Length: 376
Image (cartoon, rainbow, N blue to C red):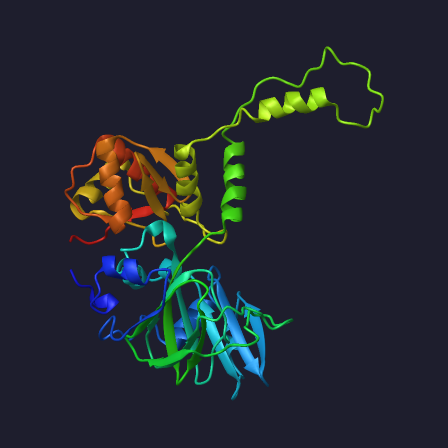
């Protein structure tokens, strides 16, 4: 089946020929797309307490960078200066943004970072740079000129507040109109320049460092290992140098530490918890006036339910992971909950077991999901 989002390519063809390999320009990937926000709405969102946003300015050829929180006055008085505002995690605020991201379900959810939206008046941008993640750059309002390069030189300008390339050599460039999209693999240098008032929607897919994964896996293990006993040396002999760590001590401790083992299932459970863990600034609110369990079950049967916009949910084997927590379940319940993870919603009148229903009610009380308010 052809995918208009991918310019006529099937997802299989895109993954085989372009994903993590080379850029792809797609004209009218989303026909008629004008964006989900106007510039003022994005600025208002940047000023909300729990938004992650950046303000990039260019004055006399030099870049400046400010991080949220912002006040409305922070976006006034630029005159003819070039500037840009970028807001991360817009999918945590707008249901329409989550629906947009669903178009990219041919990429596993475990790779998804978020939807970032940027606005810049004419000439604005963040300078030539490269990222370590995959990104789809979908043009909303206005027009943006994209310049790209596959150069190996990644030397950065020293002292700049942003990771700006010192010697950017343009190899290709295009002007994107509303609905056009550019896919860039990791390490592909690029520079986006606003041709007029323009907004770009960046769907980013993370590529974690192995070092980061290894460190966090060891943190994960520390709460799940148990080595009994204490160090003992009843046969201790006199050492010539008391400051030296003796070979007997070293061998005994090394033998105990070697007993720490893990398998693929441990790694899978770690990945499920780690990759579904919300970022540090994200919090969930329990319902102010929660439904009783009986009311919740009736609402589920009548209207179905949906995940909170901030909730992250993944699955493996017979374990479901939601917002950093693991829940082993039975096979039939796994299928139901996997559908919730895939689609971010459950239809009404589904046959859901009492155990799965109880789990859904627990997540409802935690603020991870809620019943739909209208019949479908």
